[in-house]
Length: 135
Image 1 (cartoon, helix red, strand yellow):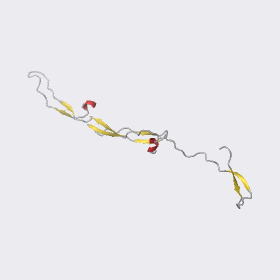
Image 2 (tube, helix red, strand yellow; image 1 turned 30 degrees about the horizontal axis):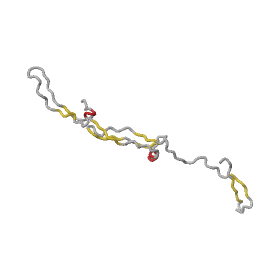
Image 3 (cartoon, rainbow, N blue to C red; image 1 turned 45 degrees about the horizontal axis):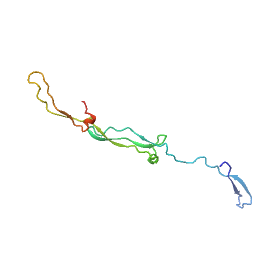
Image 4 (cartoon, rainbow, N blue to C red; image 1 turned 135 degrees about the vertical axis):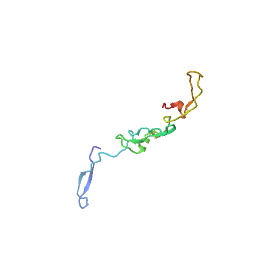
């Protein structure tokens, strides 16, 4: 690799009766190559849950990026056996659920100060897990 490459150069008539030696064209100092080891998935923030009471879904952007944060071919990330992060997932919310309110009971006393009560339930199907809104 370090020695010059020489070739025979024919004279103008192509007769070859006279010849000289000249250096070959300079070899390339670089060539295009591909390496995907540093490619990675970039994930955005989750959107709010599509449901305000019950089951919904939320979304986020997922893209394969190079080391300069440019979006590149999706196959560059998957070729390194990286699992693609989810773009959509299910979510649950009770943020805007309403309450079912029962009738007041009779007062606990017939004379003086007593207590009256009623049954209240949250309409959220996940109230036990998430709780219900306070207001």
